[in-house]
Length: 600
Image (cartoon, rainbow, N blue to C red; front, side, top):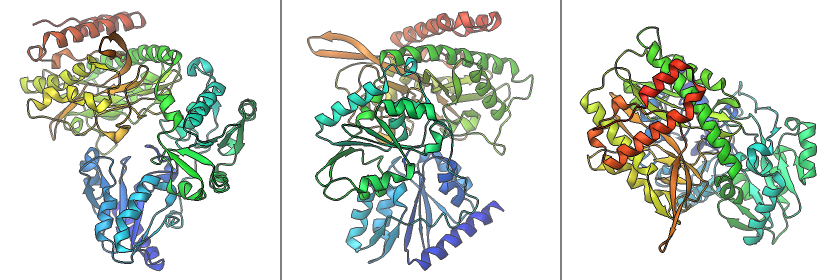
């Protein structure tokens, strides 16, 4: 029945395309803020194709319908697209617009390409126009064919916004606004346009609940030298918050007036914006004589460096998160083989244990609870059809996180549910060596994340092994779990030009997967910190702030050098000392055994 639904939706869309003489229709998996996660109202690709992954682009022509996605979702997409009329197109490089290059080759001379410009970035718009220009094809950026077909489309979210106290932010909104204006002056910009909701939340010290796993209010902001225009649904901003914003020079305007306001900017005025997070629709709305200053937003750069209050809160949150995780893995070890434990029930348990912790508002992303072969799928999320029962053997991987008022967590641990064999211990340890190597890194100021990526992969590469995803991403402070611009590895989750600075938080998650068998990932969060000054300049290091034991039964000690073994033993001692006083006696004794030092 589901297959017939998606086939019929594709057919109905092609009828509309023919009526409007559209040769190729682009359907992105984004919303007007171009974020990673979108409200159900904007999950068009899921409705149209049945594919539920978070990253994809669809192109439909008269004879072909393709869905472009990356290696995280190849197996999932193959399964979900069966019989839908859509063909999986495998991206060679994650997060790249290869569908645009395909269109540049396939579009006929004088053809017409259509897309909803609200869902396409200004960067992608330029690439699209350049790709089809040799064919003299036309591009419509104002085409919305979906709304007329999606009769039961979920409404836009209507959650209320709320003030986040300065005890969690460490800095008032007025001070943040002042610092953004300083950046505007340095860039000779009259306005700073903020289109990413997390930038707006950070600047104004507010939060919402419009997007699952993200404490965001769907909103835009336009900062000038005299005031800040906040574009949000007025009914979602309570009176007391509105008054507080007004005192700081923040003017609330209806959400859908952003385009009109931008279109009335004066000639010669300058607007600073990020072309990768600004939609084509908003970009094109500005008069041609407005000067555009393109760069990462000032808010994005400032937000990446956590202040002392935020860092203190993050460390406290890690203790609470570590307590929840320790209780979970104790429960898992005591329960598997005695009661029925499945991937879904394990996922529910870690969620429940986190919510018992002070200040936890829920998960920071969909929990990856993966048993055996499912652990070889980096972004597998169990459902009713795939839910596996855990047995007293094999491998279990848990990638999960929590949203706390004081910070956002993201951690992966892999544990053995029985006695692991030699090959399993070897594969696990080679990936673990990467986690440890990156955590131990010392590097000069001015280093960019991709320059450290080899440290995480070296042990695997030396054995002819690798993993296909990035090594590390930035993490927000009670905001997005994936939050640049800092990144370790590719530009998929950040900006390759960004220099690592003290106060930045990044993930450390080398991995290894054997398809159809198992997967390993040991992920911690790191805080970049000052190390020392030498005659060669300023040096930085990482502090591992995640607190959860690493399964020593999976660790092949002979593969660790002295420095790695020392790091692991010291880390485990810190985990125990940090968590012990918050644990019940039985679980505390259990953790003491789990963190016992290893020796050769």
